[in-house]
Length: 101
Image (cartoon, helix red, strand yellow):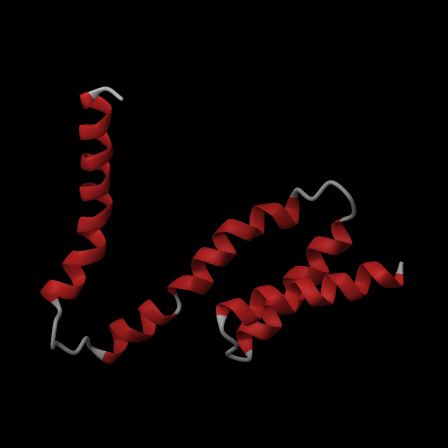
C-alpha cells in the first residue's frame, strides 16, 4: 500500500476521533444547564425524523405503510420511549399491518 494512503487513513482517523474525544475532555466534571440537557435529549428523535420523513412521503408501494409507520413511531416517541423502541415498535406495527393485507 502506498504511504500516501496510509497517511490519509491515519488523518481521517484523527479527524473523526477529535470531535468524539473533545467533549469528554472539555466537559469532564461539569454539569450542563437543564435546558441544554433537554435539547440534547431530543436530538436523536429529531435526527430520526429528518432521516425518515422523506421516506414516508416517497414510498413506492403504498402510502398507507408510510403513514401507519410514522403514526406508530410518533405515538411511541410521544409516550417517551427510547429511540430503539420507537424504531422497533414501528417495524412491529408495519409487520402486523402487512400480515393483515
